[in-house]
Image (cartoon, rainbow, N blue to C red; front, side, top):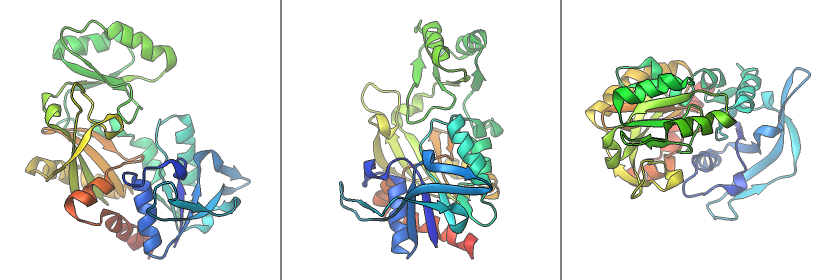
Length: 311
């Protein structure tokens, strides 16, 4: 198959951790050809969805891991699969990409389905499952946020469309910084904030469960660094081997059919203790860590699901 990756610069990735690199590596091993372009190079041109980028090959040599061909313009309708893999922020630029990529269906398969990526961003899809999640409020009104803190005392405050642990704050009962943080966030963004009751179980780790076409295939535990609330690996969280509990499987059984129905082939959910906190559909990570811990080729499972849809 002809495969295109819409992603951040491939030359900058960590080949031992980046899931997009692992997906490209596995695709190449399966005989597929690869094309790379950045989201800024995606365009609508008089009825065609085009991209300017490079054919490429990969090898597991850090610093020499991607060989790019000459710059060229392609019609993405000529590709079998396009991967939507750039990192958030989930802003209007990202949303516009999903609108353009929508136009490739049904001839080209976009993974994950951009219509539902747009309508199911990480911190909003969980609202469909309130019994699985910690107490949550989404608001821009300061009085509403204050009322949530007064009710739950210890809470997490973060941008609704953030990622990688950026801008995540824990506000304990003694904390007096809510107004200042509110002023900070609203001073540079018109987006709402999300508040969740703090879950003490995060000290034991924030579990990332990987689902492929709606089915759980394994999990890693991300343990916060000393003195940190955030467990994201971008900010020093330590990945550890861990299995799936009955509660994890219960959560996956509830959300998996919806993910499969909406074309969300590669998804990473976050579970703290018994609670689902996020459903990551934009650019989930964790493949390589899970493969090392469990000795399972997760990238192959993802490509098998995609290839089955292209038959």
